[in-house]
Image (cartoon, rainbow, N blue to C red; front, side, top):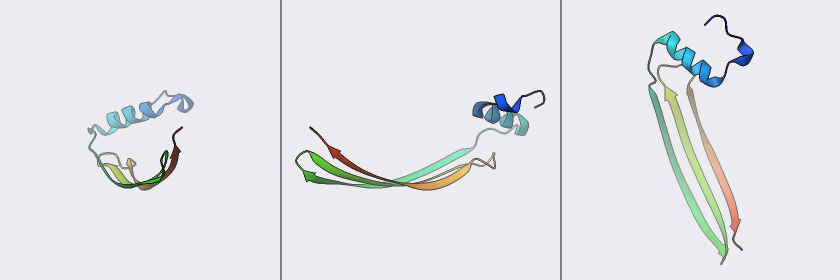
Length: 79
């Protein structure tokens, strides 16, 4: 797209103009899997552990692919 100042282009603009350039609809697929454990350490205290694996892909847009994992450990105390 001509006439655009690159410093003023937002992420939404990039997605919009990319779809105009390819004339392809979004073809998104996301998969997620998670597991977790809750451990009661005391009456008002708990340890929470979560593991998540995920992947994302849009077959019509080459750069819209990513995958990863996330581990969260929380210590919560209630007063």
